[in-house]
Image (cartoon, rainbow over all chains, first blue to last red; front, side, top):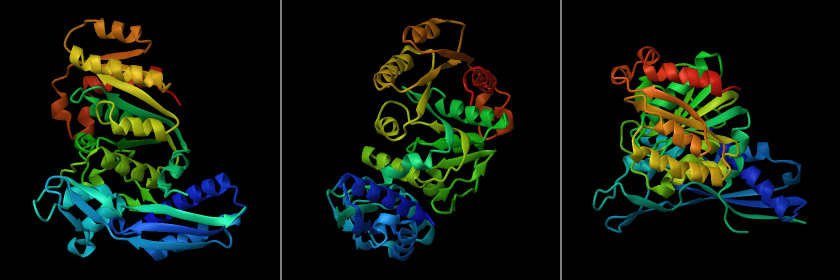
Length: 132
Length: 245
């Protein structure tokens, strides 16, 4: 599962932050996942629970989804990404590498593939709480 | 804390079981960089080495055309496992974008590159050969920033236009203390030695001059034909004397 590789990245990054902030024990990790990448929340949560190191033993992972806003660089139109508008193969390709959206999605107003993924691309760490 | 992209933290972990990472690069497009990258990867694999080929020329990928790649897909297993093509573990954006044009700007190229570096499970390799996009734009700078053990092999043609950009690339890599294996001069029409001499003046090894071979175009898509081209013969010599484990 692709989510496992992302979970490993989250744990590695969170460990580095915990070390930098001198946290002996991590209590809470807040993660956001953009809709464009269509990360399966349950799989990610399970992978995180399996990969967490000793000082994350009691850590809770809060995962929330963020809507994906796309903005056309040609006409300025902004619109929301909707997975249901894509066929299964296209959705899967975007799941693996969100940037390939540029090969399949066009601005609904002017038809340009030159758009910006303004918000909600992939996965990012929002916050870590713990005790020093 | 500020929000953080976690993906970059795991890249060197993904690459730690790869012995050498060789970026095949050029100052300009159209010099035969993808052909050199592909024949180098095939040559190393033929020697019995475990080799990966990673096409990072996202907007103009061509290694799949050179090898005649059809109907292969990566698998999901705690990341993305590249399919094996002609004995190489092969990763390219074409696995995901197919025949569609992927019009990517700089930030998108960086993001796609980071994603593939973070999730591709190469496992154990002797060599990972990377077909770079031409020039010294985002992908080159990102790779230097993110991949600690990267080395460059640079391709030029006899044209002053190509070699002037190579000089800039060499200076940049030298300033950043990135190892350069050497320079290959492709599509030579005569025995002139000026590129070899200029390369040595830069403090970089001149690896080989490859004569222009009109049979190369016919070998596109056919690895067996590719192996008997002038480019493959010279790359075999370059690999034998300059690229060891």
